[in-house]
Image (tube, rainbow, N blue to C red):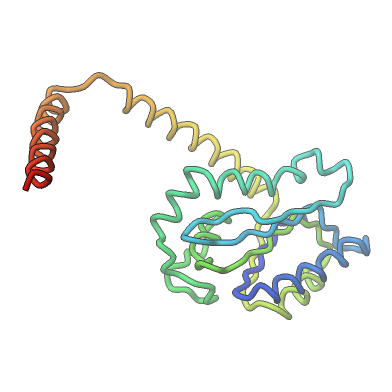
Length: 206
């Protein structure tokens, strides 16, 4: 099965150890194939890609080779920003987090589970048996999730379309002609700005 597996970590050393094991598994070329790996970290409420590597095979030019980049573009773009601001880091890596939706997609789940300083290893894999990766991540973290690779790719495409619509809506709203109500607001602001300058000058002269 082609999957995107996400392992959540709160300690950097455990992340590095798990990453080394994952790289070894990738080079072993056994029944578990690792196409791409991305390491994401959450800081100041925002999730960003810190490092990535791939198999170097021709497949990395295809869909599976673009999943990590697609995740990065969404999670660090307007959609990811809106999710992060909305969540506010209130939910951590507790497997039974009360606000975690059982059908949450990858982007929503990453945003909910990660707190500041937490790290996620995201791997695009093909597995005949889930046991090897379950054992690998199970030795370091209590929270591991799997998502279908095809489903994640579709979510990336859907999020990109949503982002395009959001950007167009913002552009249209910012460039639309002012209504009478907005014109009145401008006049009110002019009075306020002029008053602020008057108070500033009075304070300097005093």
